[in-house]
Image 1: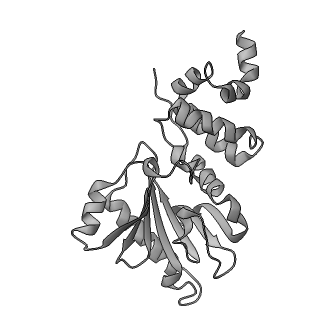
Image 2: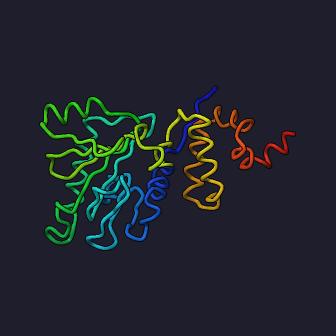
Image 3: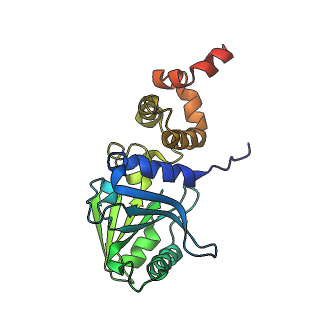
Length: 232
């Protein structure tokens, strides 16, 4: 069976907005923000709409005014080179303005999001670089000592209660612990393009589990009622 190529990045961008659902009025989101006329693209840029607003969502507590996001899909990994690449993006973003220090360096943060724990990068940052890495919450790590405040979010370690959608943006979901919960959440949000984008990728990434759940999970049966009726 040919492996389907899934569009993880749009789903992540939608999931990020869902996670900040209660505070969307404080933030402006840009997908694949273009750094210059050349094809240098930040995966996502989140800018506070009002200076000084505090973000309370666990994955955004580190945020300042300008927040650069680098996302790695389940098929990819977060490397040492990625760290330096995004560090360069942040420096370029700060410098590429009409006025000197129009964006202050202290107003910028970097967030790396990956599915699996980046052991080599963590060891490099804490060992070779001597940075202090603080696990502030399950799946969320602050890197202290660099030019910019940095956090690393590990999706498969995130709280499934505090981060219902982003924590499940992966392939290894279960029926009882994940699919059933998402289906129940999705029933009230199925008309939202954001929720639809995330749900579509998650369900295609976990196709076999979803097919099995259709015979076991009432919430899934309701979502696929028309399809099941046609089969019958």
